[in-house]
Image (cartoon, rainbow, N blue to C red; front, side, top):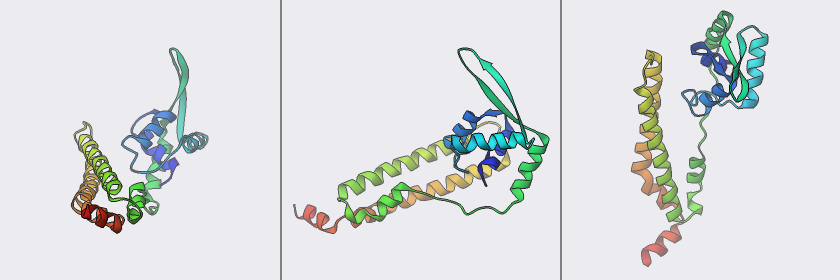
Length: 183
């Protein structure tokens, strides 16, 4: 799935500005699907408009520059459904925490434990946000399925980190652990 398809997916359900599309793809309900920067969203929207898949209108705003609001066309709706028929790309999972954990043996146990606890709190906050999304009005059955899938993954990550944190801390400089135990 690419930025073009992400834009169509958002516009399929509502009108939006490029800024709103970016916000939804970074911190909103679409942040789990495809990474999209302003530098990729605006060219995608321009191309979609050139292809007749979206239209735009300019709305004046009091005390601010006018904003450009995009809407999907019927051809855009059909193109979006066609895009969903295409083979899916490999999923991408990136985690700065896992890079940190991979090299825990180079670090003092106190730091490893502190970072693991921070990660655990981030995961718990993600779970809280997902549960909040699960309670949102207007959810479709597809929305519910996706939310449940995400919740299952995050709860599994939380359980694994909580129950195996001591193992990660034990990887930290073994000589540091022995030194701390002797003191």
